[in-house]
Amino acid sequence: MNAHIAVLPGDGIGPEVTAAAVAVLRGVAGQAFAFTEHAIGGCAIDATGDPLPAATVEACRAADAVLLGAVGGPKWSDPNAPVRPEQGLLALRATLGVYANLRPLRVHPRLAALSPLKAEHLHGVDLVFVRELTGGAYFGRKTREGDVAVDECRYSVAEVERVVRRACELARARRGRLTSVDKANVLETSRLWRATTERIARDYPDVTLEHQLVDSMAMLLLTRPSAYDVIVTENLFGDILTDEAAALAGSLGVSPSASLGDGRRGLYEPIHGSAPDIAGRGVANPIGAILSAALLLRHSLGLDAEAAAVEAAVDAVLDEAELTADLGGHATTQQVTDAVLDRLAARR
Ligand code: ATP
Ligand code: MG
Image (cartoon, rainbow, N blue to C red; front, side):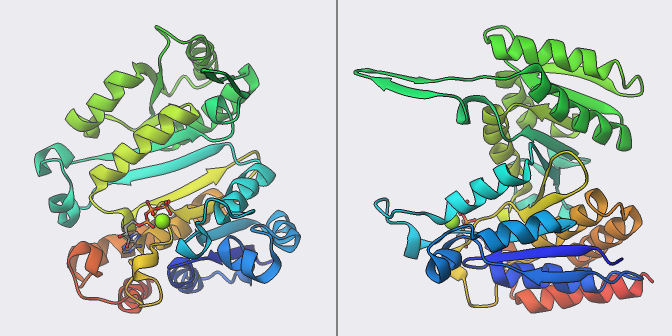
């Protein structure tokens, strides 16, 4: 049976970059996928009043993987609006139970000049963040009494175990090094995080575990980013550190992400937003979406060689092809996509 991929183009440049990713998936040798398209975000509000229509949820649950563009835009950003596009995305993550957010960071030599770091610091950077996505302070009880506000940060052993296991599996499949980030000198949740991580890591003798406090990790990402392989951390720390890491990559347009739960189904999306300032002009950088499709091949479909082929085709394009305006070039979304497809075909 063909793998079924639910495509959620969303708003702004979402439809443009997901079309590119679908074209690349169609160009993967020896595979035929079934694609269905569904509404999410602002366009879903316009069509149905709901940022995550029931039909979209049903289709995603039935699919082997979900490929998402981006949601949101000025049309729906009125703070007094009864529903907002971003609620659709949060609800989808919760519904699919995707608790592990993977964000790889590599810096292609041609893009090193766009990074705030010096090229010599970026040499050999190849790491993946695994951010816990469904727990911690973002989901704890929130109260406000008079002058006092409280955000409860709560983690259970089971919540830590499942995301750390994912990170250990990933480290095992990579260079075997895991860095766990916490604030165990101050926070009780971090002490639970650290003890649980140590216990789980014993099941992975081939993985070397080290701990870093989040404040030093923020510094080490700037001073020796090439020293890391897999970095696992809780929701709030991960939110902050992955934005720092994205800035190191030099461009929002090239970074992919995968959100995984139990089992193989995952949600794949570029890390950039809907970029309303350039939407509809055919100039969006499709590389973040295309690399998200590569993660989909690897993590949901088990097609490791095919994923590597897509990544190699993107690397070749970054080596030598004309790029989009965000990377200083003049190419259109279509031209970059065609360049990736050419390299992919040439590798057969
Ligand atoms: P969010 O929607 O998550 O709040 P944001 O509004 O912070 O995101 P984006 O929508 O990603 O950010 O856009 C930030 C800037 O980066 C914009 O100027 C946008 O044009 C540019 N940008 C983002 N993604 C791309 C892309 N794929 N190609 C070219 N430019 C991009
Ligand atoms: Mg935006």
